[in-house]
Image (tube, rainbow, N blue to C red; front, side):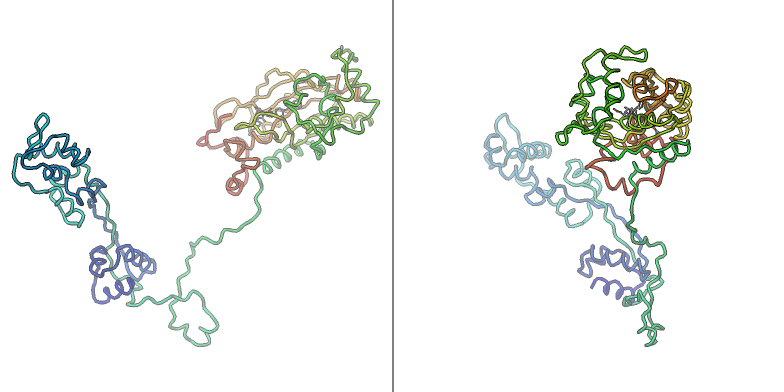
Length: 497
Ligand code: FB9
């Protein structure tokens, strides 16, 4: 109906000056008229131009006074000719009307405010305030002075009225022809295609979002890390066993059985199957030996090493457990130098916070060869991290039960303009390597880092829970950048380490 009204009116008139007045004139709601104008404008039946009008509307208080009269008027009419006590008057008109009414009536010199009594000063008064508010309500104009007075009393507030002026458009027609959106066989065979109006192609229309698979950011960075290791000539270690025995996870790494990390506060031990079945007995004996009384120049830990402790099954706390298996396997064959890496899940019974979950992905690299030194370790770290876009490294002495010397690795982050801890490293202790059967002069340099930290940094993710786990933000998984090379990250999304 609104459409016929607009198109019909323009058939005989050049312009619809004001859609608001047009709506009133046609008795159609302005919103309906506006929707039709917008749609006809879209199809170029008309050309609509915005017109804005500042107008005033009553506030809640203004509406109350427009309905019940201004408080000063209500107060005045409540005063009997002989006057009344303030208390009675207050009871009569209520607290807010009394408070505001007294101020205004007094200001208008309508009443005499005694100490306890209130009396009229004039016979009759007009409630101009109410009258003005009603005018506003009916959309009538008031002079600026009255507007300011009502504004001061917060009885009115400005409202922007938006409407349109409308003229015929390039495709104007008194009646909207539903443009054909398809050329059908019938159109062709009937020849009606000659008359038909075809809807214009909207070449900038957004196509249907193509649902497709998304690589999780962690997997993208995992791929990046794997590529770096393969390019550096490393082989991937098989990490497909989350469940590990305490022996390979701790004892083989010369980590003493009373080490704090070996109690259930840090480690998830298994109830079922609780104990490992097979271990290489001869090697176990040598590990027992080295823990209890040392050897190869080490004095060991001098404690009573328990087999049942090493039999306990757990969720591996580091992929270094896989390194110990691989190095032992390597020692069982004539020695060949090896470069191994691993990237997989490890589990630690730790407090969960913005950057820590009970599980994360550990990345580990190791090089096993004769005569390797700490310098070789620093060198390979320089090579590895420079491929991650981190060229400036610093090394801080650290301690791990299975490496001596050990170093924490810090890299300078160009984007954040600060040093970030990027991992840990060291040279595996002879107490770990020799019982395996590796030759005396074979050294193993190794380092480790997480997958989550670099991924959070590269993808600007602040909370690890958005990245991994049951609270993952799927939107992020779907909308994250294809890939992130190196660290030149946009500073605007600050992620503090
Ligand atoms: O990943 C860590 N930080 C990091 C790594 C890379 C990175 O790269 C940027 C984009 C390119 C940015 C940050 N860290 C190790 C350092 C910290 O985050 C640290 O607070 C948390 N660490 C985890 C352990 O938390 C309990 C990260 C995890 C970690 C620490 C040490 C090892 C592995 C993972 C190790 C080891 C190791 C040592 C010697 C021999 C063999 C393995």
